[in-house]
Length: 162
Image (cartoon, rainbow, N blue to C red):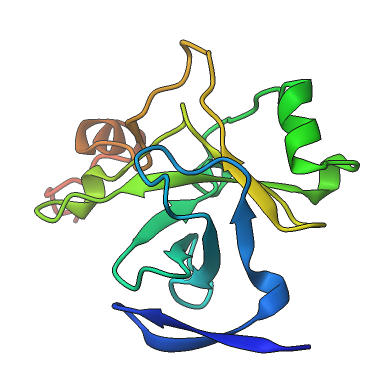
């Protein structure tokens, strides 16, 4: 199987299988000139990946599957999307969401559930779908905020037993 070298600003040159290149049948919103990407692992066992543009070293999106964060996330793909991507088996479809990680506070990271990246792994065709569902947001928190976390965890006591 042939390999290609993708130049990246984060990881330097990366060798990838030509078969692992994802071709977008419709571009990611705002990035119309970029049609070819590869998925790179952020680190071993990480819920995050990098969707790296094949021709633009500095363009990469952090992506994840919201289910890693126990976020219920299901939607129906319209027939036209199924056709565009050439989907024949539901198991071939992988869904990612673009993650926004604030520099000043990474715990406030959010995922764009309103416009998922849908990949057909059988032919490596993909697109960003814009959902028409008011239950989803472009900024869904991936981690619970501190007040929710404190409410869920047992209260700590500073009293000594004795």
